[in-house]
Length: 357
Image (cartoon, rainbow, N blue to C red; front, top):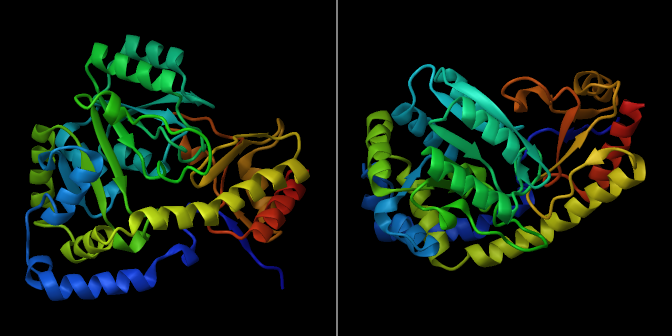
């Protein structure tokens, strides 16, 4: 029976989870701070973890909010900042769940095309000449879904334009630490702390099940978002935050990142090599990290048609249209590689090539 290969969701590999270390951290935190993590607490999040994050990021603790995953924190931002019809810019393509969330809040979502080195600045300037957004949601490092990384020059231009037109940059950076080669660029938060709401999570670094995301922003905005959080769920999941804190306190994050790099870098290389072997003429991104490669299918084909044919060969793909807020993406295909072995990746790309022919 043919094995089904899933080039669909961008999920971590099961073998990446630090299960034994998390079990020890859970036992320690429940014994040492049991009442603190089992009782209701401030909506800002578990204070020891907020303090740890503040030290790690070099900011004041009053600038840190922790919630049940970064997507819920975006929800809080929408509840605080948006009313129906308000304009929000995103990259095009961008994370499909963010598009869906913005639409549920009846925002007018404007997509800014991205190049291999980040948002197209000329397109952004044209969009700004027509209307200024409440915020611009960007994923500068190893973008989901394209895999692209924003250059330093473009980061500086984003900061300049945000200051000139007075809009907020919402920087989503869950993949930033998963750089397998190349030089790290500064975050937008580092370049413009007064104009940036930085967000990330432990989903890709520890495990999705810890449901621990965080935001770093100006204290006034963080306080407003904390009030929205309190009105939504009183307090977040303190047990998960306590376990995450104890795990981080033990110094386990740096070696975990190195393990993830050692696990995922060969899978990225396998995906790039398989594309060269089986689809040498396809246009593909060549990221230096993260979870995703994206390709543009040849003219005359569509992702919808290729998906249908691939499914008959035991290959599941994601529709590209959902990543584009204003249409487009008919030939766009995202390839998440981290949860597949190198041999599965090669076979999946071979089946993809057969489906395109």
